[in-house]
Image 1 (cartoon, rainbow, N blue to C red):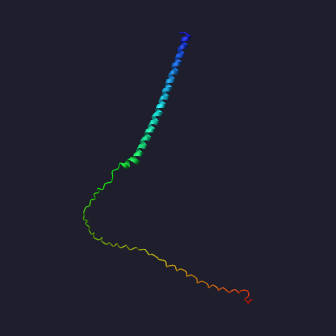
Image 2: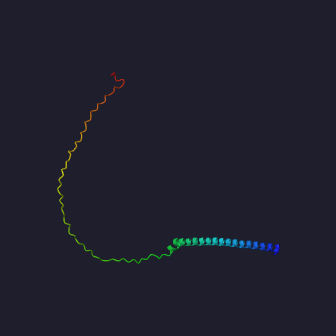
Image 3: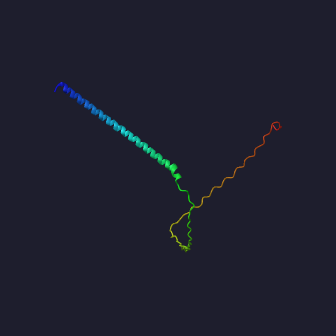
Length: 134
């Protein structure tokens, strides 16, 4: 093999390597774009489903309720209550046992009597000027 053929083979190998790398990179970008699109689409579908449920509960369900009916049945059972008078409970008297303890009760404390109030002296009239009693 000549140098030109070797060089041509090396260039071909390098070109194929670059081509494979480019294809792999394109596949990776394509996978990333597909994943992003799928995630966005799922998010939109979930949001639409939530809004549909909220719309049904707030608007659709109250309109779908049946009208109230006047068919009300009241069942009246005639029963007689039997009352029995219970016998009064017997009276039981329990006598407390005698205890051998001496209890000393102190005499009541005599409250001190309040002191009588001292008489207050009457105020003396003050002479006015020009009265003549100076």
